[in-house]
Image 1 (cartoon, rainbow, N blue to C red):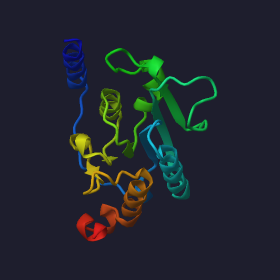
Image 2: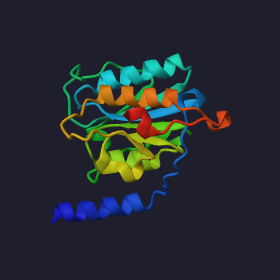
Image 3: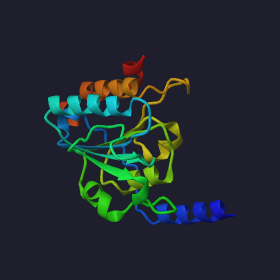
Image 4: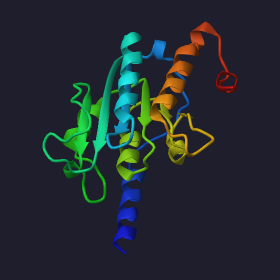
Length: 194
């Protein structure tokens, strides 16, 4: 009964956030600011973020991230190293229904991003809330359960292949290969991925 009430409240919260998928494909070379959201408890998530940060630095793109770390850790037990470009969101900063503390996430969601990466295979209300709240015309994700939030989803035909690092390498390769509309050149995703 309580879980039904929580799901009802969550659906009402999500409905109140204005959101539309815009399908504005933007190559990394045209981006000035990129955001990313990841789950700090997922395997390889930190390696994935470090790889993405290296690609963005190489392309001189400003970036910010937010890490969901919803498992209570003892002091000094956090999996990820402190990254000055990442805001950490802990379990104690999330309400009973999953809404994150506005003071913690306000800096992240108030920014305008050219591209937002959803770097998680876990599906949670908090993750959906952050994705819908972010200001961006182009969202890339890897979990087909949230494809209605993504402009582009890089998912594996095999559910077992959930290596975040490989997915982010494919996505960044694609985004550094496609050309902007100004160049009047395009590359079909099917051709690229085959």
